[in-house]
Image 1 (cartoon, one colour):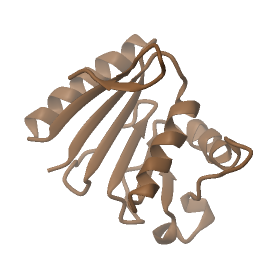
Image 2 (tube, helix red, strand yellow):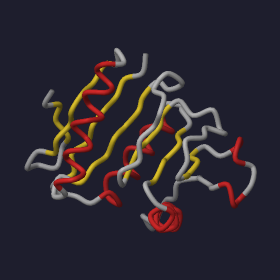
Image 3 (tube, helix red, strand yellow):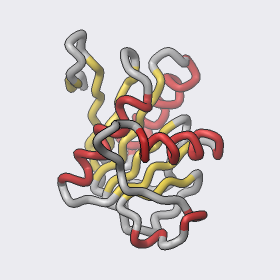
Image 4 (cartoon, rainbow, N blue to C red):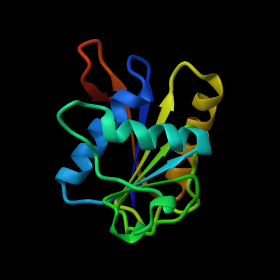
Length: 149
């Protein structure tokens, strides 16, 4: 069963956190799917992942780019997994219907948005009911992520 991780954003925005998590995913030899809650966010992340750092980029694509099955990181608003990803990132309110195909499912939610917090709590309960190992991560004052639950 998948490990489900919840990252509670309070000190940094998604644009600062997601690239680091994706880099670590690729370093482990895993592929990733990033599921966005809306097409506008998908477009913004698509551009950002090419330019987020002057000395690096994250190789990725969308259905529009073609060769979906070859993408190390696939961005989508749907529930598909064309690249056989082991890790699914859920951002901006996205949810997945099935945890089973993944080694990890990572919810990243805005800690300043009450609706996002409520949704994260519901997804936490759903993941636990499905038998997943569930962990909660919060950023400390020094910027490091700490496991809180």
